[in-house]
Amino acid sequence: MKEPVHISTNPSRKPDLQRLLHEVALGDQEAFAAVYDTVAGSVLGVARAVLRDRAQSEEVAQDVLVEVWRTAPRYQPERGSALNWILTLAHRRAVDRVRSVEAAAARDTRAALLDHQPAYDEVTEQVESRLEREQVRRCLRTLTELQRQSVTLAYYRGLTYREVAEALALPLGTVKTRLRDGLIRLRDCLGVTA
Image 1 (cartoon, one colour):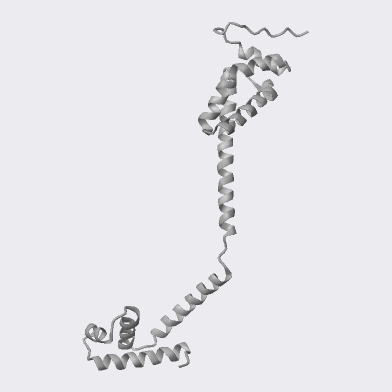
Image 2 (cartoon, rainbow, N blue to C red; image 1 turned 180 degrees about the horizontal axis):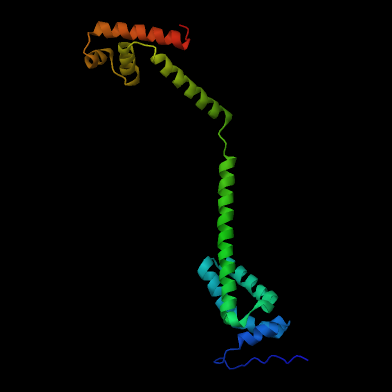
């Protein structure tokens, strides 16, 4: 027959956790109640230090104490004190919770990014715009150097005919002719009908 566990009512004398864990390993519920009363505050403190969230800390503390009940036979006194074993369980479980929460947040973020697909029209417009830009570049390469400079200054930099003539040090009439000829060539290359 098993001896009953006697818990001292003297608050200055702490219960022998190692002996209590041995009793818990044998299924003694009173011993578990004594372990619970002795370590619950410390377990919650460790969980709270890692998690910073009261509700999650309380859940982790509860899980740890259930784990102590289930795994008490695994406690090995030669590897450290009973309190350290329990607090190590608490710390590991709290860190696991943090990792779990972070992994869930990362999964949610990835899922949100995958769910965001641009509208079909938006993609079509981007592709068409890119193709048009490439076609314009290709057609600009077919112009003479003076035509290309004139068109670029007038239409891409927004200069007036007079400013283009000054920038190229050419007469205004020459610039107008080169621009007209360049635009006709671009129109033909791009297949634009007048």
